[in-house]
Amino acid sequence: MKYLTTDLEKLKFLHHGFFTRIGGMSEGVYHGLNCAYSSGDDKDSVTANRAKVAETLGVAVDRLVTVKQVHGAKVITIDTPFENDPPEADGIVTAARGLAIGVLTADCAPVLFADQKAKIIGAAHAGWKSAVGGVMEATIAAMEALGARRESIHAAIGPCIGPLSYEVGADFKKPFLDQDAENDVFFRPAVKDGHFVFNLPGYAAHRLKKAGIETVYDTRQDTLPNEDVYYSYRRSCRRQETDYGRQISAIVLK
Image (cartoon, rainbow, N blue to C red; front, top):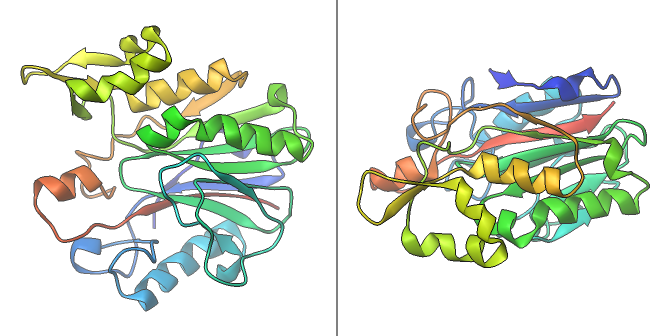
């Protein structure tokens, strides 16, 4: 099993990991460490994969918590695992020790947060819709409601579709430019006429900095071309595959 960390790990009170697809039990189009019950994968395989992630983070598998992601900006605060099905949300925050919170991605940007003083953590699923919609800012606000201060929060952007891979049509730019004309800097002309490549991690970092997060780490990993390491929704669509797996990114207070 392989996962990435950032300098968030220097905060000795936490563990975190941006997990890849390497080393899991799933087969077929899900081959590897697919951690999404929402996929069509065998549920026992997903549970076994999540158990491996939980063990790496030092928690029981039922203490590894994710939500039903809907590409929105809702963030929930938790202190125990869910008793029933997880709620719809795209961000989670907690101050509870031994509770790993995570997000599932396959091109969208996973963002992990930690307040270096208040010992409060967060995780956000920042696809383009959630990022424009303010999920990262909502995660910061939820952390502040628990006692965090944004000047003490560090953030890390995990593997996502990269700035050379995310080709989009001209209409895609509209919500970004409506928000701020200066967001045009995150688009570059693509080879195909009328198309652009969008810098999702760059935009996410910009939004974090604008929100007052001074320390932002970036794993600088592109999910689309690295098939052996990462799942990719867009790659799956290009191949007309029936489904795809999702890697997990998670953080826990010791």
